[in-house]
Length: 330
Image 1 (cartoon, rainbow, N blue to C red):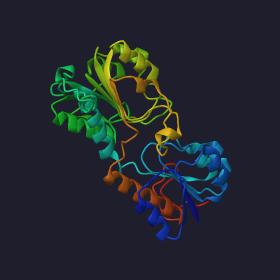
Image 2: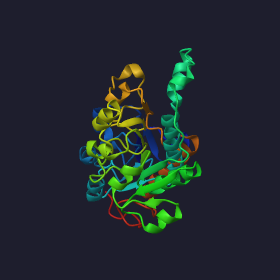
Image 3: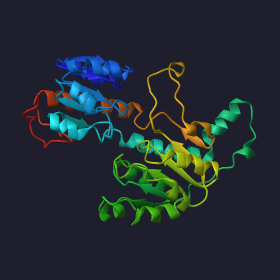
Image 4: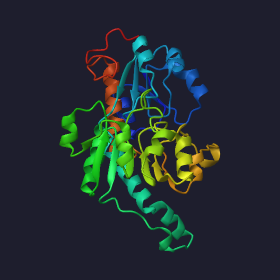
């Protein structure tokens, strides 16, 4: 059976698939139209966050039996259509939680202390430290939107840094708030009004898309700082741009933009533009949440094993089917 891997995973994951008898093709950076032209040859596809496994691709992938997401979020996979077509969808939600949480915290420190801007100034031989008077996290309030795996890690670590943690998540039981030492907010507005730092850790769904927009930013404390290491589009990026320009938001650390750029092309191979790239108060990273050696290895090998097991008819923890052998797959 043949598997196409459209975005980079650990070499160990590719080797695992090959050693288990699968033919594997890697198509990193392949244009969408070319992928659509070859997808009919494959029994499984492995993606990260950029490749859209939508109805168009699914219908052209007439042999597809498994779609593997190397990572957690599945907003780029049309799960209902996969289910309709008998395609098992698997992901690796536990493999990169620590990496994503640590990046969010790192971005928070950078926004509070201007670390990237100071480094850039020093490389220009500008050592005027009075131009970069930062703010301490200790004694401030962090508002965490989404208290799942990643949000809980962020809460524990920032409480350890001396912050008070409040969170909004209507789907998490009260016991988890208590366990993590986090005060529960009954509404998003309650969180926004008291947070000095807002960090977002939700999936991208119809409910969460654009959940922080102009109205929400205007509720916040003046000078609030924002981190988004979850998904682009959870914050209305035009509203964020305007709020930074007018001083309502002091700065932001953004790991995910909408739309996402290609992560495999050299700078001269594409002309990606985004308004937030114009602002010195915004620190932007290229969706690095899962980009640690540990997370890459875990994500790559875990998704490879899940896809192999599903193709071989073994029991898998699928997102769209019960943990039974995938009977009736085409």
